[in-house]
Image 1 (cartoon, rainbow, N blue to C red):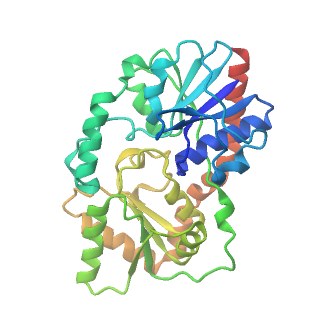
Image 2: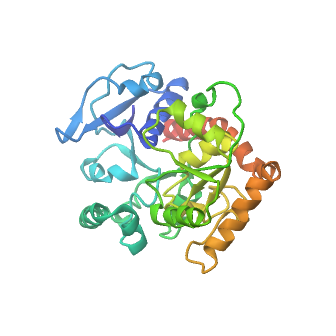
Length: 332
């Protein structure tokens, strides 16, 4: 049996992806189930599948009890590695949905973005982290090139098991005319984003900035659909979801160069839309590209068409990667 470890009550892009893997394996005829870890009880529990993800578990209504037998395969995300020390018999696949959620980050800019609580969190992580040296005996799957390169730097081989965007949010009604709106996630890169917003306030610009916060999926889609630009100067721990959703809603994507945004594979936009926020000309260069996008929107949108094409192909690619993974499991 293939068991996929997941937090029991958490609804995020990461936990959705874990359940999407369950669904694809079900379609292939695999004996597969979700193994829920309940933080409150500090144990693995058998309980009803998270109602937000029931559509991804068509054969089992409840999670399965984690079973460490030689016949089983256990998939565990990089954020839940504390559980693998107790696994002695089953074959383990570590699935790297991110990099930065694993490694300790005491970068001053990072701590400024996320505040004092993040400092405490990172210190706790440093005390409990499972070092890469102890992970070399396991199989590794990666969601991003960023993760693949990270593991390669430690001479750890990996295979791609990426992800895809749930496109259900796309059907939100008739087309909305684009306005001079820039959307952003206030939880990410907030200090850099504040610099940009303040810059435009001082210019008395007509450009509006709208945070993607406290919205349901439909509201996010409608807001992105009305905007011309989505900016993301966060840390990009993997292939992030909202930039891809924004591109599917025909926003121009502008990012920094941190994490997965640095390489040309995870966020496949031309380099002229990626900026180093530490550059002395950062605000000047950002203003130039934003002004160009506002005035020449269609031309800029066309220059990011390849990124949209890649995003639209992610589902079929994920299905192929899951099939390859399952074939490997069967043969092992």
